[in-house]
Length: 386
Image (tube, rainbow, N blue to C red; front, side):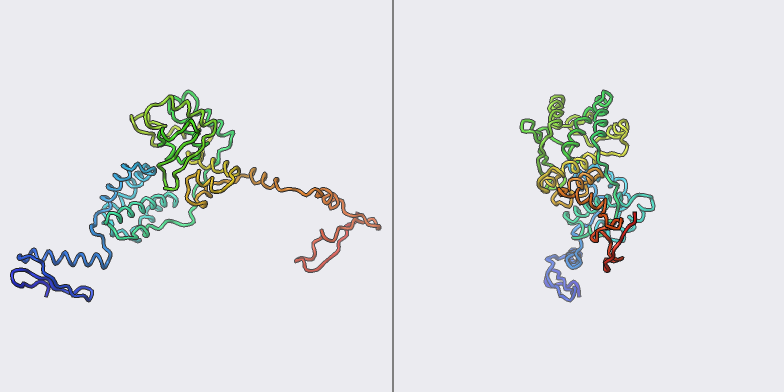
C-alpha cells in the first residue's frame, strides 16, 4: 500500500531500505498526494546514494563557472576559457554533470591522445575539468569527490624551461626597447624587465594595479594571485625601479600595463610581440615563463633562507619551487671549485706524482695508493720499472 485516504487527506505508506515511512501528505487531491510521495522517495534516494540536489548538464555548469571566474578575474581564466570552449565543452557538454565518471574521463583522455596531443597538454585540460567539477559540487549539482575521476597522467615529462643567460637577456631587452617594438607593443620592455628581475607569474605580471607599486619604498605588492600564500611583496632591483619610474609617468589609468585596445582594462597576455622579439634576438626557445625560471635560478644562491625564495615566488611549500631551479654546468663547476683545498695537498700530490725511488732503481708505489685486490680484500705490492 502506497497511498491511502484517511478522513479527507491522503497518506503515504511505503518501505525504503528496510525502513517504513508513513505520514500525511496534507493533500485532498490524490494526484497532488502522489507528487508529494514521489518527492519524499526522491529525497531519500538522493540521501542514500548521495545524488545531487539538482542535476544539470555539464555545459550549463561551464557557463556558470565562466561567469564566476570572469567576475573574480581569475588569473588562469584565459587558459581555462580555451580548454573549455575547444575541448571540454564539445565532449562533455550534453552529459549530466553528476554522471561524469572515470570511464567518461578515460575515454576523453584516449580521444585526445589519438588526436596527437601531448600528455602534458591533456593534464592541463584535466586540471580545468577538476576545477569545474569542484564548482559543481559546491553548487549542489554533483556529489562530493567527483573530481577524483579525472586522473592525471603520471611520469609526464614537461618541456623544460630555458634559463636566460645575461648576454641573451641583453640582446632580448635591446630588441624590446627598439623603436619598432615601442610602437608595436609599448608595454613589452618594462614588462620583460619586471618579469626578469621580479620573478612574477605571467598572469600576475599582466594585471598589476598601479597602487600596488610603491616606488618610494621600491617594492611591488602582489595581492591578487594564484594561491592565497602568494600574497607577498617583491623588492625592486635598481634597473627595474628606473624603468617603472619612467613607465608610470607615461601611462594613465588603474593598471600598470594597460590594454592598448580596451580602455580601462589591462593586457591579457604578452601576445605575439614576445615571440617576435625573441625571434629577432635569436632566442626562439624562450617564453614568458622562462623569465620566472631565470629569476628563481639566479636568486637561489644568494638567499640566506629557503623560505625567502619560496615567499618571493609565491609558493606555499618548498617543493613547489624546485621545478623552477635549473643548475647549469657552470654553476655546478663553480660549486665544486669552491670546495676548500688543504694547505699541504700540493706536497702530497707531488709525492704521489713522482713516487718514492728505491735503492734498486725502481719506483716503489706507496702501499696506501695501490688497489688491494679486485674487491679490496687482499693486500698486494706493485713495482713499476723505469
